[in-house]
Length: 411
Ligand code: LLP
Image 1: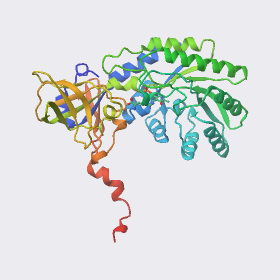
Image 2 (image 1 turned 90 degrees about the vertical axis):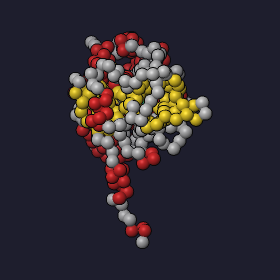
Image 3 (image 1 turned 120 degrees about the vertical axis):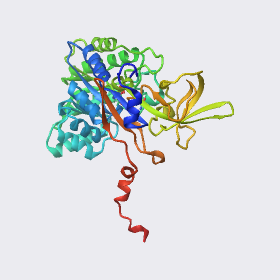
Image 4 (image 1 turned 30 degrees about the vertical axis):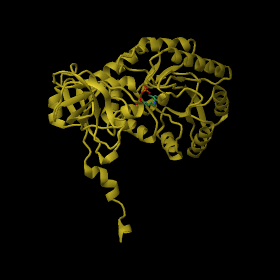
């Protein structure tokens, strides 16, 4: 999200909603969605937005209105998607460890697909479907053992990662599922990693999985949904990343001759550069030679820098002067609490505003209450107007579930 593009005055937003604050540009989300959906033009496709990247109901609702489906990894996310108006036929439920209650609930909602990640899980789903006297529509997550060339924490398509099953195991599972009265194997899925900037690993994975679909066809197992996962990388700094048309091209080439609907599960692509984080300077200080800018936002609000050493561009709003390098740090009691290291910034004063860029994905959703800090507010900007889409959490909100408990232990 570029500050210039939104037509919204940052200072006005800060005055109205206070800081720290997440702001999302809904027009940018629309553009990203149309760009990706457009790249699949002429092909059967469904863009199932990865809810984990930003699960605010207003964000999901906006995408649902555009026609998006939802890729969910917990029953909570499935319920969010339904609540936000995503059609149940456009919802997929993935994840390596689904609980019985989650499977039962997802099956009773009648969502499009439950994505299986192990043989043991397939047996649980079959058993629960039998109890419910239904046939569960399933897909199987294949681990194609392809190196996605991304950060090890967000790489998922190698055998050393916990996700999916090998090609051989997948085949055995499809054969079993085909015979089962309570399983209907109609999808295949893979997701090799996130923040992918190279096409070749995606192409390799698509080819491996498309070959598997062909060999299943020979066994009379008809796959209808070819789910390529998410993972399209975005520009945080100066990355050269994947173009939607090129992405769609390698997928369509791989599935040539197959009558399948392409499913994709983008999260970061849709959201990262559609969001900014606004934070206020509390103080400046110098320890030895090191300049620190202490802000009111922290690692509990935006964990990516601390967890992955991720880079987010940080700029001061309407501030000039000689730039020098500073670490931008929060008030949390951890040395790992920083939003940026060695960031060039002008001299700053109490209450100056900093903008942290590219935080629309995996920003708010990874935030916590560490240090009893309330979760921050979220605002949507659409056609130049701003709307509060999540209230700032109060102290009372935070202690509510403790206060409501039995306190007789303190007799
Ligand atoms: N589908 C599956 C099965 C996934 O596991 C993920 C992300 C996605 C789709 C969406 O991927 P995307 O299009 O956003 O790359 N917290 C990390 C990212 C974790 C991604 C986990 N899986 C971060 O902040 O970079």
